[in-house]
Image (cartoon, rainbow, N blue to C red):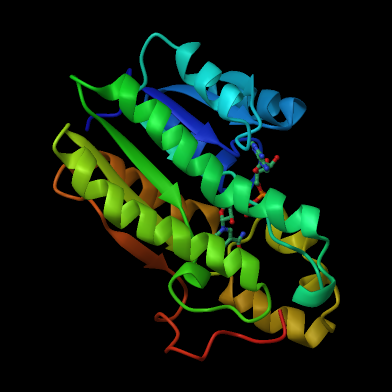
Length: 245
Ligand SMILES: NC(=O)c1ccc[n+]([C@@H]2O[C@H](COP(=O)([O-])OP(=O)(O)OC[C@H]3O[C@@H](n4cnc5c(N)ncnc54)[C@H](O)[C@@H]3O)[C@@H](O)[C@H]2O)c1
């Protein structure tokens, strides 16, 4: 799909990967809708990309539907809003946080995919989901996050088959650790020694590298149902996800 003049929604557009995607889409001439639960952050991004800010909590079915209905047309949806558990241990993670995480990372993404796909009927569209390497390989340090992202990978691959018949392409990116506020604010990273931090720094992928793949998924009409790893080294072998982060 050509990006110029297309309407593109980016959830989690107020920060990190989402903000970088909004800025690139703006540079490529898209009409960007920066959708985030944090309105002030969305407004900052909107200024950077020449788009408009929209406050949405993707865990709310009503708010997801209202976002889509507020626009005359939607061509591109980047489902990118996400959270970590940020707990030391699965056993002590507050249950409310677990529900919020799954509803943000997975259920909200499904809700918006459904609402956007219905509005794309007849003319087609592109949906890019944000999963994670921890959706391809189990991440013992945050099992709920890992499960939510594995859900995104399987949802994408399964729904891509159905939506392809309507000329809607769905793909998912699976980044390793990315240099964003999510990574920087993670208590696990903050607890590392300066030496360990240097090692982590070498592993970090830049948001721009992630955005490259988002743009490829939008532009290349042959791609659907793909889950693409983005990392400094290869996909870690099964059972070898980094511990200590
Ligand atoms: N940073 C990494 O290392 C990394 C690696 C792999 C995957 N990811 C995924 O990439 C995506 C973006 O992460 P990031 O690193 O840019 O994080 P980030 O914390 O910098 O940005 C996430 C954004 O999502 C928004 N958000 C959170 N809950 C929301 C909700 N319910 N409704 C709407 N917006 C909401 C936040 O306000 C924030 O602006 C996430 O899905 C994350 O899981 C990140």
